[in-house]
Amino acid sequence: MRLSSCLALAAVLALAGTAAPLARPITLPPPRAAGDFVLVMHGGAGSYTDASPERLEPARAALTQALEAGRDILARGGSSLDAVEAAQRIMEDSGAFDAGRGAYYTREGVPEMDAAIMDGRTLAAGAVASVQHIAHPISLARMVMERTKHVLLVGAGAEEFARSQGVALVSPYYFFNERRWKSFQERQAAEEKPKASAMPAGEIYGTTGALALDKAGNLAAATTTGGTTYKMPGRVGDSPLIGAGTYANNESCAVSGTGVGEYFIRNVVAADICARVKYLHQPLEQAADDVVMKELVEQHGDGGVIALDRAGHVATPFNTHGMMHGVVRADGKITIETFKP
Image (tube, rainbow, N blue to C red; front, side):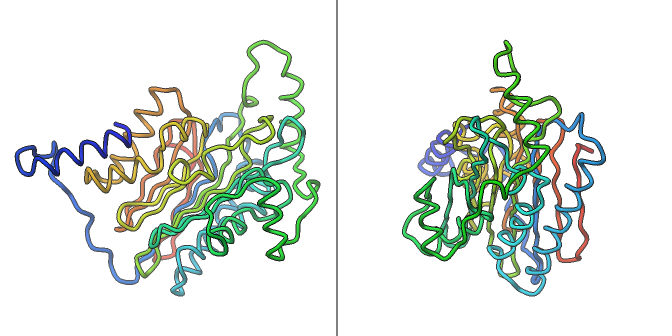
């Protein structure tokens, strides 16, 4: 059931009163314990079949470091927004994911990056897309949210805004990544071959995302990506589009997606999951599974999401071979998984 269908059904039930009961009893989340917090992150869904330990271990190490940074902020009473931004900056710096220094190259051989951040308490959001000279797109996205009246800035306009805010622009060489460059060269060489794969064999999408629930009970979401290898210059995926790849609302949930962005855009995946939680009163796990494991699968839309609700429930469905993701709560224990149990 898509977002429009969810809203329509909710309206019908509201008008019908008790004459049209829900298919299942309404189950509200249990109260959140005082002092609890949650941080959940992902490092991209995709094919991990050919991923060697030499590739996976640096990614796990970077994800662990990011979770630790976000955890420390939340543990001392910091905001969910601060936690997801700090965690994402580490992912952008690592070079292990499709974000920042690990971003894929466009057909012109230059990385273009997208990012978005959203405050579940106020619904304020900021995003940037197709930036080439920004070391930390997630921080620029937050500047858009907090220092402009807009939500999304793109390309040269986003970078001019960054310059006006004192952000130092970096050379595209700053983002050089040998593994990503090899992927670009392989894709370029295969361009003239029939039925060339959109992604090299064994490649991981690698988009990064972070969701947090802070001690005050506020949700936040952040996603940052370099898109797909050999994409058309100017191509924008779901990550910086609020409601598609990034969404947060204290009344329902927070979501960050990873996968083939065009499917997430067409299905408004992040907002759809949260609408099911808010209007149909579905448990978070069911809402996320129905969208990722049913609707996207029916359309051959590869990918996954991390989702977090106001009670601290976490859902991490993915329909690909793997999706590296991790969770940390108030007890401080970090759990990282890549494959289904």
